[in-house]
Image (cartoon, rainbow, N blue to C red; front, side, top):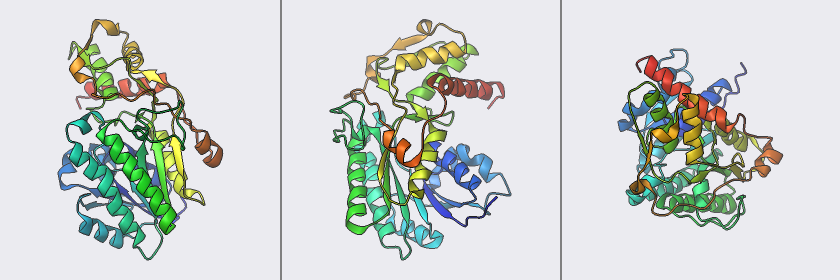
Length: 332
């Protein structure tokens, strides 16, 4: 293992992407530091295997208490850690929920990004900064598929906050020559996806119904289309962006769309059950404003950084359902 001596700081290390990114960087011989909230000790399950590993924890992986709203603490963490790369992944990332808690969503996705950009700008040694943007910035997109140059037309408080942060990142890159990249990531899933996300809700229900623990799945709009990829691939894209000689923005996507209904069908196919027997539509789950067909064109990252997604849509769904079944069977 080469000891590159690289130091990275990850906000949101306990999340789906943060946990996979931590694993990737540890494999690449980084020293990894993560910012965790005091309350998130309940939700650290995604990095628990790393914390339990005595060869890794407090040797190559370090956790620091901090909150995105607390600039003083964030500044102190960055000064102590002196990261070469900062991956900003933290924040409320549930689009539907952002209509219910719009202010805290904008605070976490928008203002926190500004705070971190200011901290990065004031460091004596340069910091490469990755900002987790989102396809939700395109919202009611004027073109399909979307590219890095598609106009921003968000349709949710979350999308608005991400659009604000994405533009700020561009301003800091242009005005202060800060090395900042926006990763405009389309939906990406894994067995570590949060349980309030529709994909996890579907795969969990399919497994529970197959094991006779539940008997129905209630969903909103089944026609809603998404460009779904694998989280494990998408964190690789984040890393590649910060290794390139110039900072830039990149769309990270599969270029394929599937409906929520197709996801349901694929999930129930894994457990050999007829989905239509168990799925019920509840209009109250539909979003106030649903983005038009969000599908990304990842040509730029493919041509510039050589990244492309692996695996198929069916494989992703199978991986998620099988992980749910394994968890039930092991009594987890």
